[in-house]
Image 1 (spheres, rainbow, N blue to C red):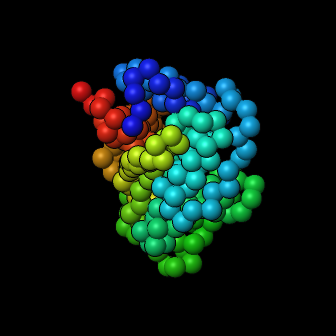
Image 2: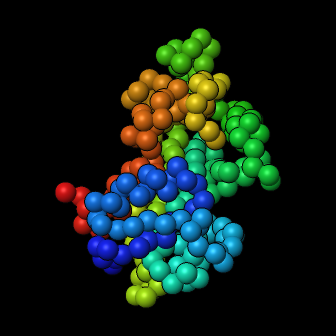
Length: 215
């Protein structure tokens, strides 16, 4: 779909994300640029009902404007007790502008409104409860405008929503997301630890493998 020596546009202005993707695509001999390197790509309204739909909207819009293959991602938190919410609305769950503290507070309010109590989670601290299974999900979509083709991958991190935040790292819902296999919240992980298990990292690894860079 995309050959060695090609250039790929990553539809983001997040330099940290760009560096992560550049390193991953290096093994394929593909150069990665981002929205700092091109002009004329406006903010794309995310009107999809799934992470993959939103990622595709962003990738296709960017690719069509610049005339080169483009890659975009969309991710969020899916809570079982809330039937998958906040989902694609994760960043703006409590309204605009996006506010992490407000989003976390609303998440706990919604679980309390439904009477979700959960069992004790002593590893996280006295009085902390595990309220609901949940997962961070990420979809990546690569779109090639010349061929009119897309390639999609996804990644997940399974965990539980806690009744109280733990940790000062990360962002978003990380302080409320407990990872049973590690015995810590996402916000208590180092950057390297988080990158090693992240949903985006899992989706990126899958994408690289599909493009022939898995060996």
